[in-house]
Length: 381
Length: 81
Image 1 (cartoon, rainbow over the protein chains, first blue to last red):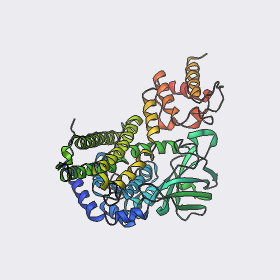
Image 2: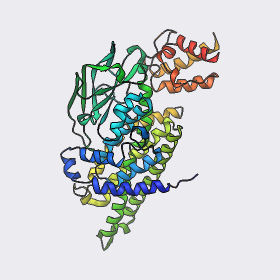
Image 3: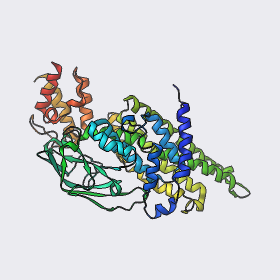
Image 4: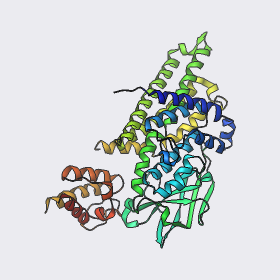
């Protein structure tokens, strides 16, 4: 068993950290307050090769393995303060680009995957509806075949990237009597008649990642834009969910790493009662717990990414990774604020933004309760 | 009763109890009633592969094979041939 990173991975990590510090951290506090997405940051990341990293070279990617992707996402999370941007990018990669790469036709890959790798087009994953969240396949949106087209009707909510998206991966029911086996996926282009994007939805955290509702009213989609076979939506969703639950919180582990460094520096410098506060066990032990959580999260992430690369990741391992890392990110953010005291509570310190950003991690890609249900079921309970 | 039918009826009734459905007839739609949903399918596949000498591929997971107890029995019996 070899836990060491390769020389390429170490060098890529250093390069990504330099890039993020130089190119991605402008005005994050102001943009967070204004709920402002950075298209400039998105394109810089694409130019750096982030969006294409794990995808085939023939579609503009680099063909990197998933452990390398985890290392790079963690490095971005460590050095980039704009976690809304990182979340938006990761969401597109794991839930739109990945199904396109795995299930798309050559034409679909050339038309959609390639420009997503290059940053020219932005994708949005449209599954959740006002009436179906954790029960992901209780969809009301329908798709009815009409000649060479499908007609889509319904509404989607909490759609990351929707306000800036060029392509929407929409899940709809094509056979109501077939339950979850009657779900089919479609690629709907911005500007399609009957497709409407709602006003951006305000959020507690990840504010620089745009989100809105999407409405489909008699929206006509060519049959050539169906992704995968009829009734294959669940399989497509499950495949992308394995990627999502494994990888989407990698940048959160980077945030934990940054928080520990900040806490150690502050605890050594800040003096109370005539000594650095790090000399008090109550403070030191809190930082120790942060470090243990960081290391265990990182091990879970790398192990799950490695299993996913081998095609051996089970739903339980993906759920454990998502559950543990999301809960650890939140606790680490709370601890970082506590170590910084009143200063940590201020916007200027920027730790409070990490806390707000971390709350969403327990909700998106399946709540912590859903992850526990999956683990319990895998244990035969 | 045929062993395949008996075993499949047993596991389907077990899954139905989770949904608080007391009885399931051989031609009741398991998918529409949610007895076989995206979570139950994993348990069902593991049970079938464990109980019978079959391997279920992604291509097999279509409504025609899982719609009701009768179609499920036909599917398993065809896989065993």
